[in-house]
Length: 474
Picture 1: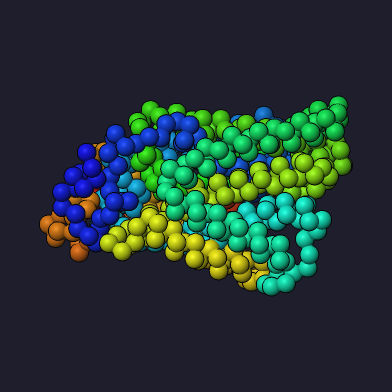
Picture 2: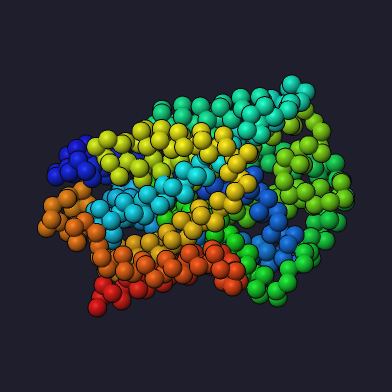
């Protein structure tokens, strides 16, 4: 079976080979590939710092922190199992799935919003990944040198261009090469993290267990009570994964079966997060025992260890981890989303080149300009308004369409098509989206709603789904 035979009526404004359903016989991913999607998503420098900080900032017993992390992981697993199921069933990516609820033209709205958010962070993470290469080159050269252009030194620029070019080479070779890199990076980062933990443990000696006990009893000056601290940890972890939840179908479409997807999500979310957090706890406790302060930034820890072999190994690890999360969260989504805008002119590769072009500008200007101008609220606003879209997509598929789609109609621009709705847009979906989106945006800009923490995304999704159900059934 070929993609061309799968879709009979191929409207060029809705179809290309990258968006077409993947036939079952061509799906090669198992649980290990899905595990590595999540492993790469959590194994970033920020992911490590976040995991370590959860034990230090909320004043909770360590077991309570682990419980909150596991609950968050199980909840995210439930969310992605629901979003991933139709893509496993039909082999379609997120923007095509969105056509069922938003309309064959209306799906471009969530797709372009997701693409803008991802492109911004793709550029930023490309810069962050380049700092690992810069660390490696600086270690070999005996120094970094002074800034020469836009706040970065010559070594910084060489490192940035190396990472930028490597990512282009990777995606140009196709999704199979991306998967190979993710399957390498996931286990490799764990191996290096375990080596780092053992090194720290050997340096700390018996003091490590003592400091672990102190941290486990609860530290930090969190102002709220224990229950609110528990909820804050759960919400923070949910918010961390929210960006990947909505476009999870971009990955699950490659999976052989629902069982393999669910197994990969179980291994990759609650279990993987808990194990990664344990490593972060061990290393953080060791830094207190050795240097008298809790270091939560891996680069600071490597610098204190002062070992050239470990520095070089860690630099490769930081590079692999950051490029890994960049591919998962920030490259694959916009490549498909941009292709959905103009399928006849933009395929996965062209979408990737467009993403990389913006990344060159955003990453190159990161130090001197972008990180200084307070653009984060703008990007977070775009991310927040996707929450209601998740809710209405889930309600539409499971409760309105009863888990059944006509794939042929997803690629049809006929005016009497099932998903053409009102000139290609589903007005009911737009109405259901609008009000919850106002709430989602308000959580970013109004300090009074700050108490909602990471749950604002969940609330926005629930409101979007509930309102869509009421409007549709009425």
